[in-house]
Length: 303
Length: 306
Image 1 (cartoon, each protein chain N blue to C red):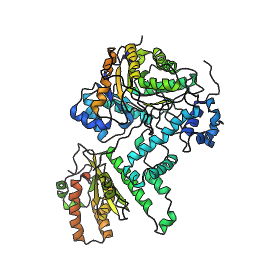
Image 2: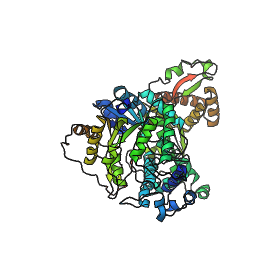
Image 3: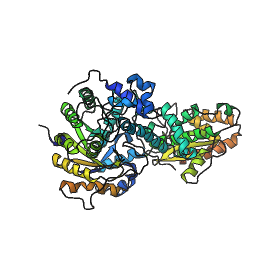
Image 4: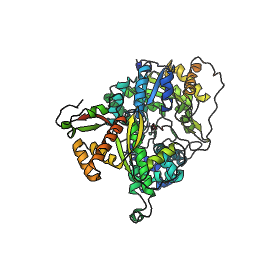
């Protein structure tokens, strides 16, 4: 067997990857500056690299990989963002996705990571920076919110959870002595995420899943808590004030600091706030948001 | 003297584990000999997929089959990925770990495709060196599969069977012989699949794959979306004869039917072990419907949400 001393596997792989992942197709890929840096070759001399078969030319054969590259990744993004794909329609979703895949090509061994920058990409490439400042159009915010919700659902589904472990019960909170109360820190379960949206995308997502063919809603703030119980992602709408409290709790602040800060910002009478807190603690423990209570003065969690 | 299957057991007739079949398997405990998992669907899972796998691994032998090792790439090996493979193999008592003779990306990127390597001495040295590194790290032989491919390279100087034979002899890695891939590549690259099989070192074949594919008129695409066609069964008969019995697995990754259908398809292999013909007549070639057909791999786990 004869060896070619000039053979360079890395060069060939860089060239092939460039060509098959070129958004303009194989021929544009071959002609691209990046590919030409590796091999100065034209489509009609491609046989110097890729052999033809009895039925297909070299370009047609390489095109099989080129067609599969975007088709595979688009299918995966459609699976990750089904409601966003519905909202945009197939053609526009594919257009946005193609731009995304060129800007953020996969760098992970896992396809589960593929959509990780999609919401950020929509934000970075929003076409309306000037109009937005003038308050003229807001649909990009809706799309970004929807992409954010769907991505977080996917992450909560297969991320860490507390299945098989006890969650915090309301009785444990009620048993805390008044002296300890302000010092304690609520430990959130690892799946808990809170999200703030400009559009009611959680309602939109529900209607989409119920095949009600929702229209883009009018803007209104919506606050959502996501967590996982029994391996199923749970979505719970929360009040703006609840969101602020949970935000501080997730930062690891003590309960005393959390309540003091949020109550001051909220301008709610203290008695009313105490009543709301009681309702929310009940709701949070039922939803299994927290796994335990700890105190900065205690080395171990409080039972 | 090499032991048959490199000393691995013949696990019988297995099925590729897919999420759509999770509820059926957990409820019915079907009499499948073993399951093969797509490693990447589980190595990071901390939710339902991993929980289900743990339950299945308590009842059935598990084999891990990856699509991202990229043994032929010129990028550095990903040791974080290897560490996760090793951990999952230990936790599920995986009988072996396999991947493909291919590269999936370069310059830090992943195309998520199984791209072919030019078959020559340079590539062989490169691949063998990486196999040895991986085997040292995993502390077990790696099992590598012949991929379906759609191009051949002007720089190739040997056949795929010559490459595979040299690779397994140099590194003592095992082979996963995908019978459907042999057929698909034989049509795409104009070679005789029986000549290919005639040169395979059968004592180093640890497992084989069966799957369906799509005929696109001028070429075949390895879509894993249908039944095994008769010419592939005939090749399987040859492989069974050559190996004397081999762990056999059916892959079905698109338009996945109910579990019973998938299981019944792999059980047809018994007919070719005894040199019988199938009772429901030969399966003919699946024709492309004109819609986009995607080569394997495509793996994604849809979340469960309320």
